[in-house]
Length: 256
Ligand SMILES: *C/C=C(C)/C=C/C=C(C)/C=C/C1=C(C)CCCC1(C)C
Image (cartoon, rainbow, N blue to C red):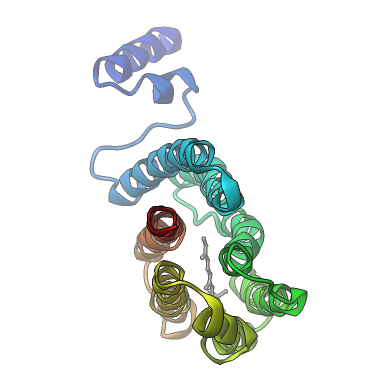
């Protein structure tokens, strides 16, 4: 009977175009109406597709932009993989996949920071200190954030220290050495993309602490909302961020 049920479910899955879902076993079954689950599915696929795109474009463009586009592909690749796991956690247990999310962030956020260094390095010589300061800012932002969310530290304290790390990053890209290099040496296309990236780190990234605040500090929101908010933020901060670099590369190569 159980076997028969499995076959019926597998068949229904196939006929609705959910072949992959069915093949992966019975632990994971996306329920109709599970919008958080839908967002995990959509975004994992969008990240996978973006990875292919950035890699192909990296090969096509080559030259000094190839590394930046490859790093964009690494970001979406790492995130796509984590999304496959996060999706399973959500769909099969309804829990928030906090650990996977932070492991993903720990890898992808430093890579996004490297992008600032790389797009500036593509056009001029940039001191390594820019990279190290952005990396330190990232760690100060994420580690206490994790400890707060996972319950290893007081949630308010983790939030407060994390905000300092983010402020440090914003300082570097708005007023620090990176911003001075961008303003003095970068051609217009790169400046435009630097600005788009800078504002993404300001406005796009603000979504995460806002989610954290409402999720853990302001009485608590439901975890479904928190996950949709984090998921949508990732589309902007991972896929769109890569597209801004791709745009600068295209423009700059057309001008050169
Ligand atoms: C691709 C993933 C990205 C860009 C993740 C970014 C995450 C943040 C900007 C998190 C920020 C946080 C704070 C500023 C305060 C403490 C809580 C955090 C970790 C959610």
